[in-house]
Image 1 (tube, rainbow, N blue to C red):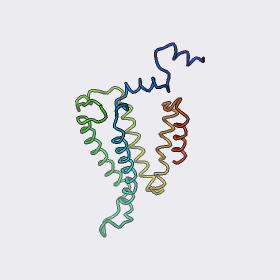
Image 2: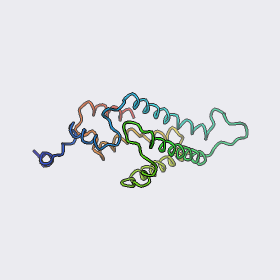
Image 3: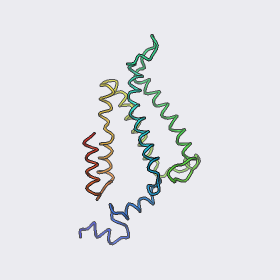
Image 4: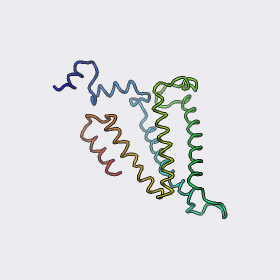
Length: 192
């Protein structure tokens, strides 16, 4: 046995990648996998995919007007104006959805309140950092789309490939998984 195996066998903690470890992680997660409704989850994921796939063409139409939907004499939106409206609508919808889901939860998560959210700042700096990075990424993608075209800006994003890389390398996800799991991950990454 090497040093890592001795550490795990000496403690009561299950070894990463085992079923016991995954069950222990499940107990700490805010959204539970066991007992979840897969059909609802898959439906929401496909709905999110449809929304994301329509986002870029909608912005392209807003700034370039390829379908000539604007009346004569109405100028095309510049990328910064389009980004402003995009950001305002994202913020408004994000606030509304978050307040709604505080009181009407899904997936067995207990309900909360706006006051509880305002008082709880433990570890929330990571979520704020994620939001800032997302905002900067969207802003740069808008500017890149104006300069190089929106298809090129979307291709550079490569979200599935990058997020799989971060999950595997940085967070140790799928550690000690089956050969089938690694084969599926490779297939997804090659497709990207």
